[in-house]
Image 1 (tube, helix red, strand yellow):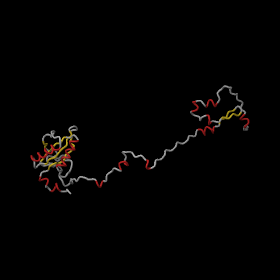
Image 2 (cartoon, one colour):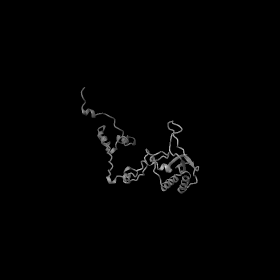
Image 3 (cartoon, helix red, strand yellow):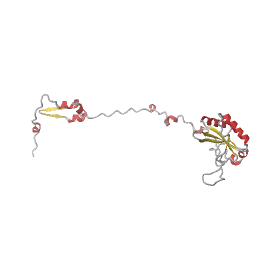
Length: 234
């Protein structure tokens, strides 16, 4: 089949548009079509006789979107540090070699007094500070005493059972003590009444109904001089 000549392609007989009919440029300027087409300023319209050609290359050129600008990079001195981050706390960290740690006794060479800790004999000043801490927490200080003072397995050998957990409560309990001096007076009175007994101080939380602290405040002279107790104190 012979190919048509270029002149024959452009000689298409179409009816002329009415003088007052909207042109293609007017249609392209409508709000709906402007969402999908570039502005009329970037559209080139050509008229050749009765045929109107639109340069599609202008549409492609108008559809190119400029790349967004990259944010400016901050220098090292301008970088913001969050107050709660590790970098913010790094400068305030203390040296671990200069930190004072309280010396404790070895748990392998000492008896267990059901006191939640293995502390060396505490002075009256240290006991007073512990009592003040208990008072600040709203806990109730209680004193207990027992002559054996250590856990043992006498009444049963079943797993998880041992005796010596519960001691005799001194003055059921000491709700009248409102300061450390009053508690120390009760400790001294219990020591005079039972000189051969172990005495421990317990912090009791009345709201949660649980024991929060416990430590020995007095040991009898026989237990204080025993090799099993003083071994490991370096």
